[in-house]
Amino acid sequence: MRRLLFLICVLILMTGGSTRIFGEEEEMIQLLLATDLHYLSPLLTDYGPLFQRMVESADGKLPERSVEILEALVQETLNSRPDALLLPGDLTFNGERQSLIEVLAQLRRVRDAGIPVLILPGNHDIAYPYARSYFGDKAERTDAISGREFAAACASFGPDQAFDLCPYSFSYVYEFEGVCRLLMLDANTEAMPGGIDQKTLSWAEQALKDARSARLPVISVTHQNVLRQSGLFYQGFVVSNEKEVKDLLMKGQVKTNLSGHSHIQHTASEGDLTDYATGCLSTSPLHYGWIRIDPTGEVCYEARELPVCQEEALERFRVCTSRQVREALSKLEIPEIIREKMIDFAAAVNRSYFAGEFDPTFVSAHESWKLWITYGRSTFWYFYIRSMLG
Image (cartoon, rainbow, N blue to C red):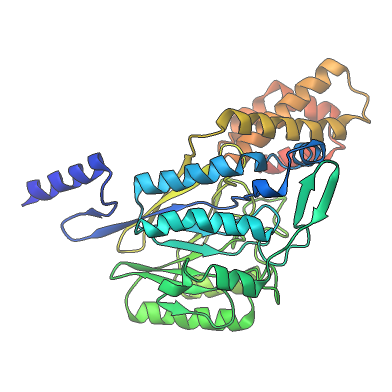
């Protein structure tokens, strides 16, 4: 019998068929999580001069490759066949209604293939004031998405299949029967953008009590981080009422939260609670999370990369960071050859930090960090890199 079960597991892994791996006494849930897609509809831009200036002066995203990135995510999901695809927020570039329409059209391919798609709104998705189209040298307002519109359009991506549905926000509980529950928490309502309102917290508290009564572990999912992922950057990145939310999850014996928003690949822990922040899907290295959950609620998290646009994404991130660093150093009297070394070093460090590959020992011993200590102490970038070092 043991040999038969082993052979079945090997066959499942080799064929890429069912994604649930069965042992003798347990069943493991597997999830694909992608956050901060920031999809921009091709109908909203001609990719002209204004658009190029906008993306090159931003944070390294690739909105001009939105179609390829979304299609790659859909194909990756169809190929790997997880038990669910999780998309916790910032589906759209800047809250454009047309962008959401196109994202949902692609996600229906996943849902129609029998893979549940579970979404949450991000801060860029609901009533975002910067929904724009970009043609020529003009950025013009385009239709944004209200909370009511988002809820109606996205009802079949989570709420319609929910075990329990919150009446106060786009929050819900999804159950993998007999194994675990996902507590999907909406922190981006129009009434309380960036935080989780008291009515939703009360609903969530009862949902956690119900799960304990059913002896089912709970994994929570949010757009904003629940725990601080950076010593320097956390305001605006964690939920605004972080203490209340953190206390709720800890009291409810939640050990794992899954989040995005900050665009960095990072893990933070406090007490028994761990918050896995998955990097931005449209920024180098186009990370998504592959998550395994055993029946005790223990989580194994693995960061993976989409196999598209990698070189372009890396170059975009390097160019955007280099421009910001060069501007910060422009008013300092630094020999040009040293300035360029400092710029290249900061760009490489920033990329490694966002990609979850940061090595503090290597950075602190690097010759170029000594140049920053000598020449760049008065700049933001010096304090930023130093904060990474702890």
